[in-house]
Amino acid sequence: NLHVRVAAMRSWGQSDTGRKALFAFTPLLKDNSMAIRAAANAAVVRSSGDKGLEQLYLVYKEKDPQIYEALCEELGQMNTEASAEMLRKFTRKDEGRIRRAAALALAARSDKFARAAAASLATEMEPGMKIFAAHALPIDDVKQTAGRLSADRKLSAQAFAALLAGGARTAAATLLLEAFPKANDATRIEWLGTWLRAGEPPAKMASSRP
Image 1: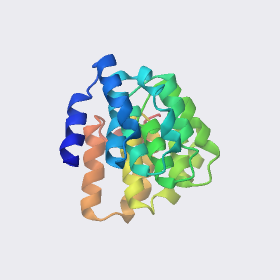
Image 2: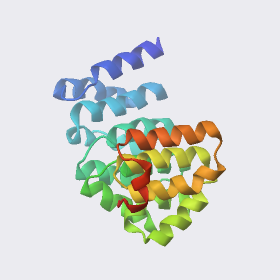
Image 3: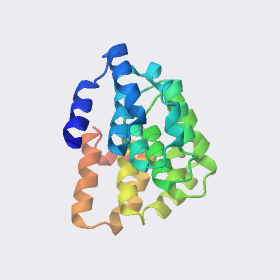
Image 4: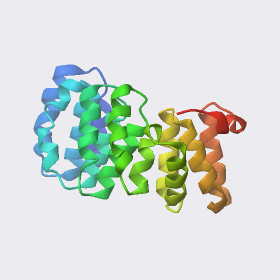
């Protein structure tokens, strides 16, 4: 059963399981099933960190965004230069879902390598990508970009959570203020809950720095 296999891979492919997991999952990177390949890519990174990244050279030939999304979720938990560079390369893919997944993962990290990679998005015209370079943008650009992005409710919510996680609180607050008037009550509650769980009262958001 496919679902059972994927669940088993997620369970076993935990951090620090080392070379044994790496040897077990690497052959599955060529599996015929997209779901298995996605789980295998994620498990390689989760179990082996940077050592596993060297085995993922085939991922650049993949077309399905789900594989990249699964991988980006794991890369977003790391803090190394190699993982940030892989995410930066993903932000240059043609498929929008892949690019956004990589940008979200970079934004959710606070390490210097992710910040440098995210800064490369500062020249993007698409607000859904440019907002993730918020720490490298003038505040007026952040406001303008947040205003344009707020029309995309799903991506706005994802960006808001990622920016908070990565410590870009001024950008997150700006996005919140731009999107809040346009959101329904349920969305407003969700956004405020995300802000409060991040550990800072809303009253401070105007003076927060990324």
